Image (cartoon, rainbow, N blue to C red):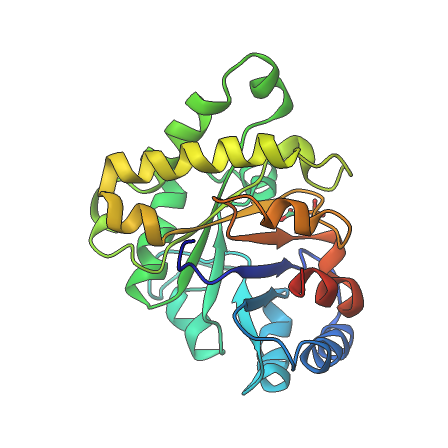
Length: 251
Ligand code: PGA
């Protein structure tokens, strides 16, 4: 038995107006009020962070953002810093989601800077990695994960990675209804944990939480969570409704 507290995280992507986000967050707060021994996080769009922070304050539900920029402040039109997210009530930030890598030019280098900025501001980074379908089919899953982990965590960000969360999200399973089997996910998670062991030692490897993401639903979460190296879930579609997300939280 490990001592890692499971984390169930909801990535709301570019869904929900402020009014909708506040409503769903309020429902979720009630539905999960009786939970314990599980950390819960939702990540609304930037504009909804402040109103949602007031709804989740003092509840079981933590708050995250979906991205940040690594500079503290400055002439960077359209960007938001780690310190600003903290000031708005965030404890977490998702970094390097495959949609950002695919559509917005996110690279391992920018991910590395963002993880450093998040940790420096005491935000918990949820660092996303995962292979595409073509990479899996050509037998390159492990080499892709290897590069994403090493480049994403290289250099100065390693000083204190204590709060780090990694999310393994095979790109072919995101929003497609195709979930990795629990054995496929476990194999990848075990590999990622062994990479952390090799890079930063057993203490961090034992404590780092590795979430699975990609079409997690109430019906498949228990099987995934039963695997020894799966410490939680990063949930997209099924996090948008409080009822289904609360069922996942209560896996
Ligand atoms: P999904 O998204 O649960 O809708 O597959 C997961 C994610 O993108 O984090």
